[in-house]
Amino acid sequence: MVSVTLSIPEDVKNKMGRFSDVNWSGFIRRSIEQKVKQLSWREEMLKKLEKDKDFEEWCTEMGEKVNKGIAERLKKERLL
Image 1 (tube, one colour):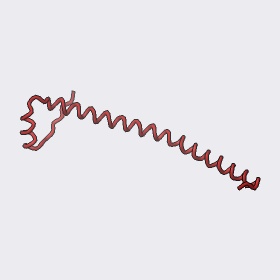
Image 2 (cartoon, rainbow, N blue to C red):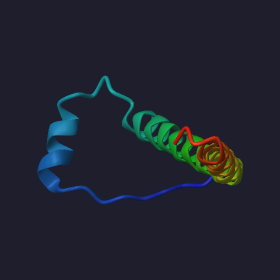
Image 3 (cartoon, helix red, strand yellow):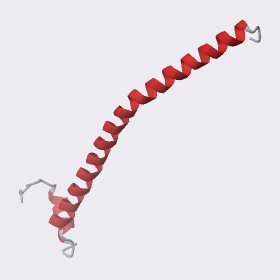
Image 4 (tube, rainbow, N blue to C red):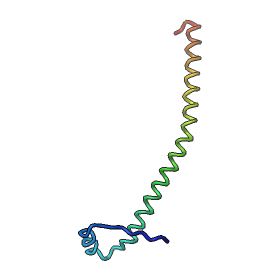
């Protein structure tokens, strides 16, 4: 396991000392793990959305072609 050293203001350190029942190292470790998990999930979702973007663009393009075809047919039939 890797060690990390951090600096905190003296007044915060004094306040932390009042709560000796808290495992501050464990708290910080869990907080970091949770944040890394959140960021990893976000990164994964952004990758999936990027893949879906191509599909969405294709669907939009097909919809526009269909609408154009319908409009042309209706013009020919003088319904538009």
